Image (cartoon, rainbow, N blue to C red):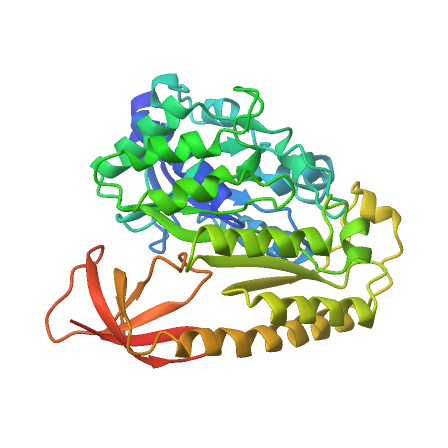
Length: 435
């Protein structure tokens, strides 16, 4: 009977939210496959009978998308298209008791750290020997590498510690072994992700060990690009920059969410840094790693934010000319310290302020892209769409940053590196010819 069930079942995993969630889904996929259960990710064929929705609970829009996705899957179940609907991830971790009442048709709910429990639903064993093994849902040539889980920071707006717990680093040995395994699968670029990269190692090594980890990963043969995401600015370990400058396969790219640039807002957000300190840090980063690309993320409409605060933020962007900027409208999250504040900026004003800030960045981005015209860059070919190849330079991460439209007279292979001379610049993209 069990063999018949395993043969029949096909599990589709739907992933919402960030790249950290994507890695969790890939790990789940690997465990199911090792238990001889057929598993797919974002299956369009609808030939599966079980769905796992891996939810996001970060901000209002993400929560709404997660809830709508669950309802969509429950509707398929009501119509007899699915046998089971399971829900996991951050939304499930944070709001399980409420959601169970609202959606009793969901077959089971799981938190962010309950993979072994989830596997029991499939009569599957959690295979500890597979730690670091996963089925990639990304294209073969790049992958995310999660170096830690959770966060010890106390930013007033952030609910991540409520959903992911305290910071837990993975060992350098485990991460190097996983990177070597990814390279064997054809991966050429890894993106290091965590809630907070720069805290890495403090819990298990008692010192910040991101520089040592980077050197160890840079020694992995066949790994051509290593990219850093989500570095916290306060107490930034400057030795990271020395490793980045010295090791050719570490991209000159740093994703450092600053959230704001007004001292009033930084204090209210509990960021443990001032505008002046951030400015000095950015100058030092650029001095130590000439040509580095800095990406940041900002929040518009935090409680108490004034027009003067917004102007300060714009001035900061103009002064430091970030290469890449993303922005979120503030989301008032329960059980965070900011939730005690009056959410006194209207949703309309939040969106307008975000738009104003991005208009400033749009000009900066175009100016920086125009400087690249006539220059030659190493470009990783990501995909082919509408007869055109699209790729990225070392200064661009996947999905969130610029793309390069590649013109080539010969056929290119997805995942290969080519040298491209830039011929055109747009606000957020480049175009060039293979040389």
